[in-house]
Amino acid sequence: MIIPLFKVTNMTEAIRYYTEVLDFVMTDPNDNADSPVVDLGRDGWNMQITTSESERLFGSVIYFWVEDVDALFAKYVERGLDISLRPGSPVHQGPVDQTWGRREFYVTDADGNTIRFCKLIE
Image: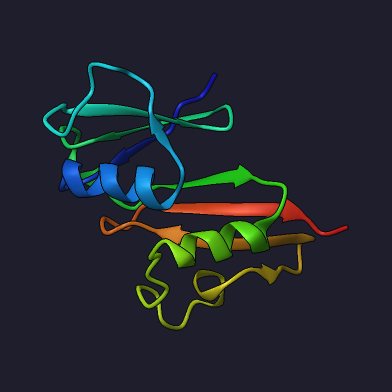
């Protein structure tokens, strides 16, 4: 199993963003906003967020395969996903069909970490 790790500056805000906007849940009952590392899970995916790693970790990218990128994007926007963070980036503004055969949208947190949600174009 591979578990990606995102560096964050504010654990409280990161937990709120990942759990309240992006549907992740905290998977370790001992984790809280004061933890240096928090385990998150969603639909069989696992990841961690941390405040204690090297400054060089900011700006990581991971892909998640999903069933319906359009419905997921709409749900996130309804929950307050800020699509103005990357004004010029079409995949941050909504799902787009890529030339490599995927329909994708990207969300980037306040620390520059990006999750790319995608599905093969049928």
